[in-house]
Length: 181
Ligand SMILES: [Zn+2]
Ligand SMILES: [Zn+2]
Image 1 (tube, rainbow, N blue to C red):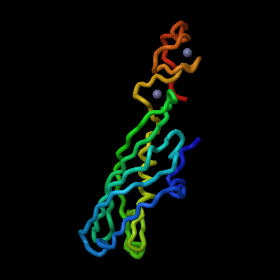
Image 2: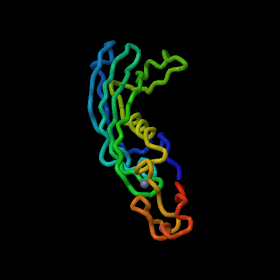
Image 3: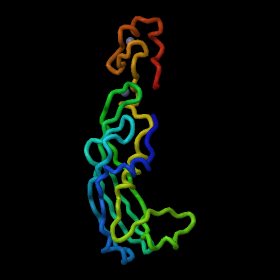
């Protein structure tokens, strides 16, 4: 199983739209606006990652004179499956969010090392960038706790709740159980 790439999520089509009308600041250098909203993410962000409710987004957009700089935070709660013991636990993430948006009519002014998201009209669509930020912030190997001992390799007992009888009586009782899959 592979974790879906950000592009898969952007194309998913189940995202609610968080759009910001930037007409008030689009022509005024130094002007900014703040907004809050929610973004509904797909039911499963990847194997073992299920959002609990929508992500809450707080963002401030500032007109730098050349482009719009959006900066803020995405708060999200997830049900996550521990890679060692396979039990679900709750994970709360506060993900920093920062993107630069360039009006689609101004692309000729982009330098070679610059990366922008384009917008047209007066609407910034934040959902794709929010989803990407969330995907990138997911832990590679989520653990219910740092020292999760995992499952007994013989009987599958979750050793987090204490030793099983086969390990307690086996010769190999002193050797640690196999970690990770
Ligand atoms: Zn665990
Ligand atoms: Zn066992």
